[in-house]
Image (cartoon, rainbow, N blue to C red; front, side, top):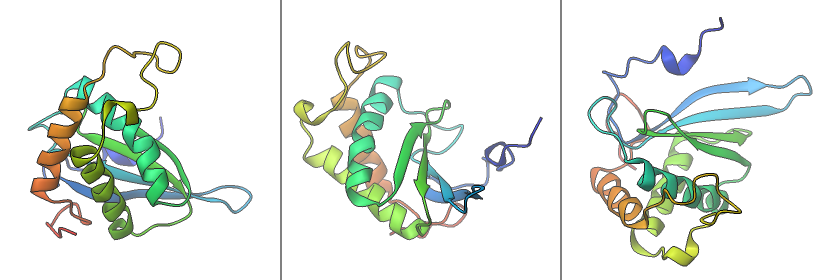
Length: 157
């Protein structure tokens, strides 16, 4: 079985919240895809409850696209500590961290329930499992801690 980079990361050494470039992969036609670790809470010390994480996921799907070119997908980690962000091309971790910070600020301070896409039976596979209150509270907590563009040393943007 192929080694997955994320599973070789020493989760006891990182200092969340942070943005980390996991890998860049080149396609057969020269395309470049970048995979980022958007770690919102410290691994093995905390986890965002599923309803809040689910709502953050739905909001980041649009908010990150408003702030970064080439967003392909933003998907939650199963451990509920953050997200994979997949993009076309390259972005610095500082650029991604600023986009994440702006998105979380919008969630924490401006978002209403009407802003959350995909919350009905037709557009979500688990539409009952959302919490805007939790999404706002976790976004505030993460912003208060500051988002670093470096995973092992705090370099808050």
